[in-house]
Amino acid sequence: MNADDFGLSSGVNDGILEAHAAGVVSSVSVLVNAPGWEHAVAALRGTESLGVGLHLNLTAGEPLSEGRTLVDAHTGRFHGLAGLVTRALTGRIDPEHVAEECGAQLARLRAAGVRVTHIDSHRHVHALPGVWARVVATARARGVPFVRVPVEDGAEGGAWVKRWTIRAAWRVAARGGALPRHADRFCGIGLQGDVRFLTRLLALIDRLGPRPGVTELMVHPGRPDRVLAAWDGYVAPRAAELAALTSSAVRERLGRGDVCLTHFGAV
Image 1 (cartoon, rainbow, N blue to C red):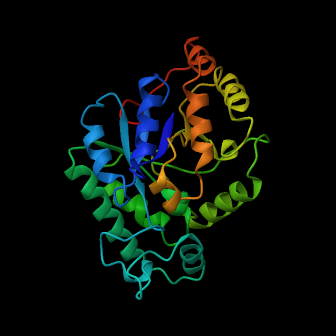
Image 2: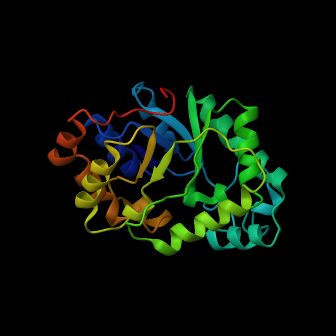
């Protein structure tokens, strides 16, 4: 159960830690160049039971490297999601700039004393052509064992356009290359923003229970605050996710014994 966006804001961090303390969230992915980074570093010092990965950010705020093809020359900030996607699909991203930025963000996370178990990315942009191969190469070169493959299978769930777009981009980006280690299954995109989050989460766990292997279930719990609202459009649903994840229904379901919570450092 991996919570994305740790480090986005103190409210998001607190919500994720609450879900971890409830025995539900077992892994996090950290934004190292977002407003809640310093708060995240302090919080991680007391959470040895939590798997920690890099949530590579190429769309919001400022880079840690020069990264010229990733950055707007006028603002010194990333181009944003639409800008990055457009540049990636038109071949205007230098893969070496991706490698430099990924390496710099990974180095910052490790400098905080963190054992990095995996890499994924904010808005799943590591699945883009021109980005994927360099992220995988960086993970291998620097000893990060797992990289998320953000392809969600199954006929159920929402966000069809988003899921199809990510799948199509990743298939192009990963064509002909050896895959990194990754979970046997990935899910969570189709749950985002769904008013039936709790009901559908419980149904998803029921389906996963009899299946062998490792499933990465992505979630976005948090306590909305001003910083979050200024940085990200996914605000109110984070509180709803937190309430569902810490509910007695989810904790009781996970306690039945047919699924085992883990993280990439323990697989």
